[in-house]
Length: 101
Image (cartoon, rainbow, N blue to C red; front, side, top):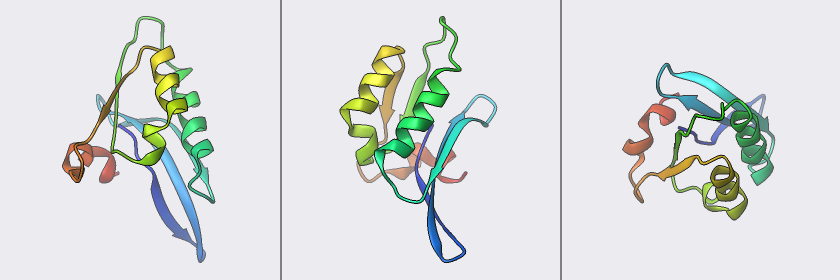
């Protein structure tokens, strides 16, 4: 599962984009940035995907955020044969494990 979270650090915004393995709640990869741009999620995804072994074909779940609907994100998943899963519109319960992180 993955999501982008905004924090206020010393009066400035900081964005965190982690990906969590639901098997053991391990953070597989993460990236931080001062702005919520695609590069934040793109770098996190690249770091997570390089850890996959050839036989692994996981599902990556997120909400319907703009970054997860981008063609670059979807293509990166397809190239590694990762199935994309997204929450239903207006239903954050589907992504509760990441929302509570």
